[in-house]
Image 1 (cartoon, rainbow, N blue to C red):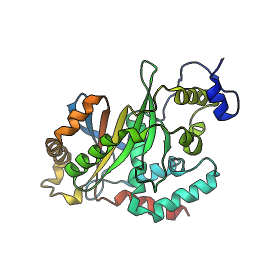
Image 2 (image 1 turned 90 degrees about the horizontal axis):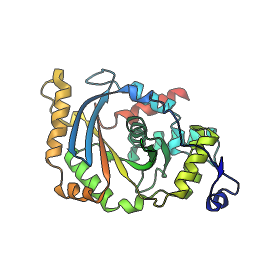
Image 3 (image 1 turned 60 degrees about the horizontal axis):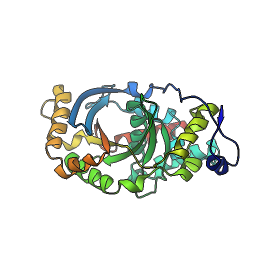
Image 4 (image 1 turned 30 degrees about the vertical axis):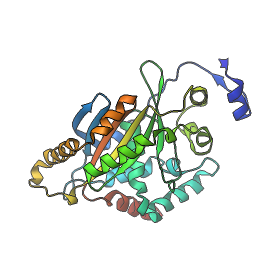
Length: 291
């Protein structure tokens, strides 16, 4: 193994060693809760994918298994701080779900887990739930071995075209404020819970030695609350959802597409629910039952 830079050694206060190229297999269990029903390639920089729950329910879908999977996925790592014990982080994260529903923590948690599963992009850290620019940071190892940095954000669950245009415009205009924060890696990252010590050493070297901390890709989740729409034929719900998304694409602001020519790429994930607050309510009920 090779001893890496003095800069990184100084930051951690100990010697850190670099091994071979990072090799890992991401758990894809969570993604099995979803079925992909459609895809729209708006441009080579903007891809839209539509996912539904794998479980049928009333009136359309059953999200209880997804809510349970989010809890079982150690969700407290997304909302937690490494300075606290797991027990304290579990209590704090549960309180966020139970008492801060106005911030939509359940949908924000889903954003992180879907991005991680669908894009094969492990979660590095999330900002504080009270942050005005709340977001998650992920990494994706490309086939070349290079690491791509991804920001994932929850874009809303009201008016789809308005939400997409508003969120993307704000994100793109402020993209330089979403750089990889090395202090947050130390304070809010639980990489050591997912990777071996040797793998963490490689990751730390990659993150701390990058020539730039800028983001390469945006992953944005939008929820479609189906009770906001007039569904003409419930037996054709998949086609109805695809039609909603296609109409929203027609209203995309052309300035957004022009801005993407600067190099940033976007994965837009669409997830329909029976109603906007459904996932939050289910998680709250499950947490209360666990207690």
